[in-house]
Image (cartoon, rainbow, N blue to C red; front, side, top):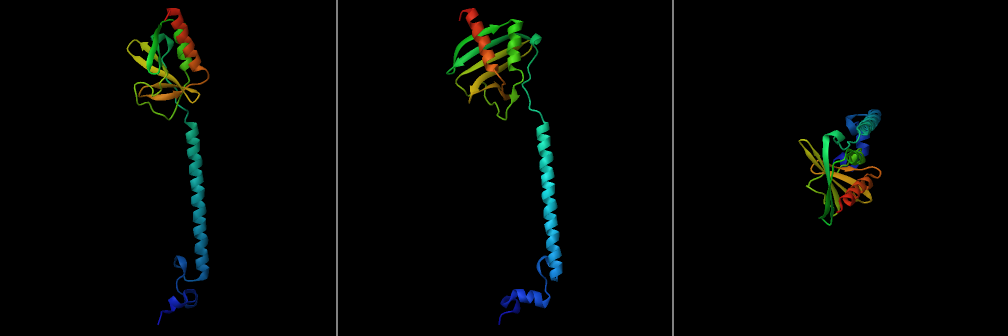
Length: 183
């Protein structure tokens, strides 16, 4: 003979006054307990929304990092070298303060991307190397285009997205100096 609970479990629970779900002994207690669990779910969901909103505000408040460049007075010379298909086309040396200022102004404001620089030079075939030579330091920056946008890559430091016509200005300085030197 089968126990009564296996024959008709619902009737057994209700008629015999045994425990229902959530450890209550009556239907009223079961309903109250269900409502309590729904309230808990509601408050947990509200807390999750608040945490997500605070996180979004904090992420938006963190401004994007920009490319840190030296001031014009501390840069003695700028070397620019164009590479096409990874072969050097020519190198120019720029010493004029106006041209150095134009180069630094064109690169200023470039915003850091989430991509990382892991090589000495970009993985692109065509790029322009800009070397800023200062008293005790030399910085190498590489300008290249990808997907219709210009990027400045500082080896092992980061990749920055330029704004406006930065690439065009840099190439104009490079080609103007190249023509002036007769290369």
